[in-house]
Image (cartoon, rainbow, N blue to C red; front, side, top):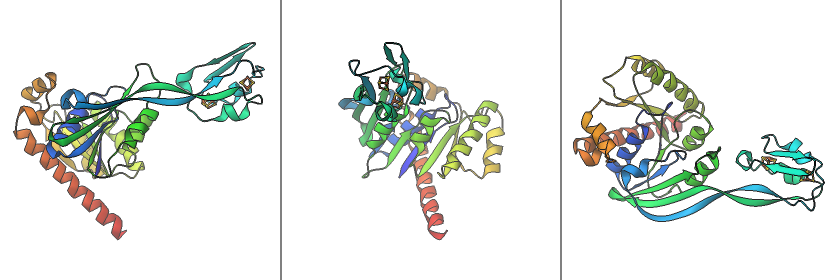
Length: 287
Ligand code: SF4
Ligand code: SF4
């Protein structure tokens, strides 16, 4: 089973839920696809097994061949190339590796080259949790190549928890894609409600079944519960504000390690996710 843990907005406790779910179940893989701010490892403290660079392909310019005709710049839909008289400029961060500029260049003045965008870190944490972290370099504009690289590491042998980037943009869609279930973490505020609705729309359009966790459930209003009821989305867990939990978080400690009662809470959450996944495959079989 592959569970994507996502949220319509940042700061809802998404990583807290992903980390504790992984530790409570154990014997699985956690993919940290929140590549602009990967912090699951801060709570899992994995023993690092490997660190490898992640690269993307960008064009390299051969000035001796170039006639500065400008065709490559006209073709590039992402404005990554600018051609001026006698000058060829690339903003490598904007290149999406579509390959078009190589094809239109009449002089074969562009060749593929590698550019490092970050690192892929693999480690082993307690409870037999394999942690794979995509760590995008600060300032890199595109998270999706890194997310694709992290997801290539997904295990076929064990369950997988994917810590997704917050929001509902391309990066989140890439991270959720292929999941059996998406667990959306929210908070009971008007902002939380608004962003949860957007996330439900996006994940629903991907045909991935959703369930919800309400964090700091005793604060705020009833908006998210009403929304979940109206959309027929199960709320699998409500986590009231807990000072001990917040202090453990500040120390970089997972809730299940700080206080044993959370172990059963998150194990139960995993069991409910499994039930939903089974139900979903039964429904699909009878369609
Ligand atoms: S298309 Fe080729 S020759 Fe023309 S400006 Fe671009 S790199 Fe130079
Ligand atoms: S490979 Fe595509 S996106 Fe990258 S510079 Fe060339 S045309 Fe632009």
